[in-house]
Image (cartoon, rainbow, N blue to C red; front, side, top):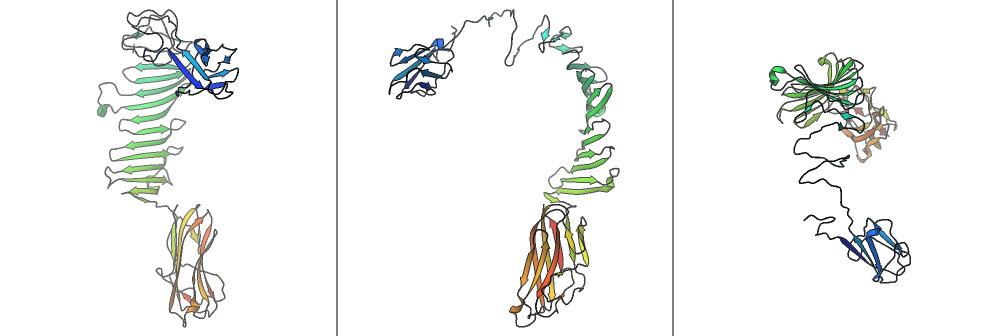
Length: 436
């Protein structure tokens, strides 16, 4: 037989037992049996103290649903007990077995699932103010005409004709449209269908996105005519493209190849958007290797012995560079590198010196940077006679802000001004690279 209230396994009352401390008035939370106090209606709760039934309001207060507060504090080890009874009411129900009729309104707090058909003899209230006209709803909710949710407010229109398939969402004269140009049963290679998302306001239609049958996607600008983003998948590669306001390409990402060994991805910018010949590739990923063709980097060197008899008066002599191996970004000029952007730069300088004077105190090779200098020092007075050659080298990862500079200098302290800088790329050079 059916039960009202809790199922037989749960019982119809709950007992909460607390052992009081001296002067305790408030009882809540877990009791002596780790059962947390809870009640819904104080009319269905009895409170006992040492077996004596207490009177509501006079002896205790119960207003929160989770606590009971005694008017007079309990003594140590007093037993305070609450018995809470399950509450229920006999509802005005419709038989689950035989069915019936709801004469009033019915509200659903969750999802209503129907195993069969839903038949409506009148109107279906959609939003509390507007009805869904069910005149054209036939059979298993097949719509042969328009479905108007709210005249003059947000609407939904489904349209199936011989030339187009539409889903329109309307607000007054404004329409958002999803269109599929392929009909059921048509061959995708013959029809070459597309899906178009567009908007219309006061008679002007603007296409927002188009998906073609070859998986190409185009997202248009606010004006509707100029595509600002598109991607194309031709089976061998995938292209993401961003266009400028004129519709010409401004940047793209091209991925090609269908095997790990042959796969590449390149990011390009176009100095002349009208021509693909002016693409400037800024990054390439191939075989797990990342290259950055525009990453700032340089190497300069001495091509001849043009700095001889270095001053021996402890002055800082700027090293001049007569030849350039490479300068990506054109950031090296007048014997000085200027950082184009803020970042960490790997800088290295090497000089080969002839006839270092043993009577001098030391030679110093310096990387002089805006954010701090680096040195390589050689104590030449440790030798009893002059050396034939001396190689000095400095390498540093330098923190540089945009427009910071780096320059190579050499110093000789004491002795005779007799040392020359050997001019050859493999002997005397200055290099730098932006790490990131």
